[in-house]
Image: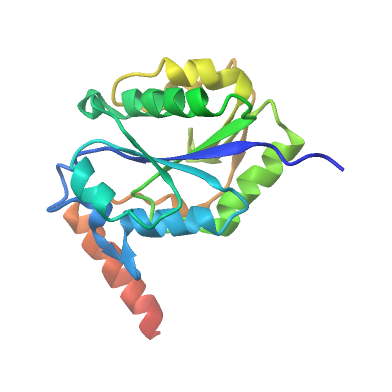
Length: 206
């Protein structure tokens, strides 16, 4: 029987959400807010090493996470972009855990993600432990994505606003893309947030 791969989860929640009227990470959603529900979603998988990267409004957001079984990482240079925050988070994790087989990166603003989908990424990774297991966005790959050990150094070198897109869409890297349907919908503006609330309200009343 194969041993379970050692995987850490990195939830990216460092942005300032300038296009949202409020702190995006704390926007009301389901029983709590975007961040706490994302944490809950990950906790419903078999993954237990969960890390959240904060930046903008870190103190206010961290205060909401006191009773969560997670590790908070605060990036002092969060305003250098998502890539910088991913690199910072990965470096912190690797200092503490140098036996990892993979790192799963998720975003705080994809509230429709399910534990089942995240677990399916892990199951495919077990069969292909040297490949990136990513999410299909039509003409490109994106997150959630699980990166194998051999790409940890590349993650540590990321910078700017493009997150891990350069790694995910580099032809040199072996990658498997999974279909997530509407789960990859991300919420960046107040308008998108209101549409999400209206849609879910309608689904519950029909």
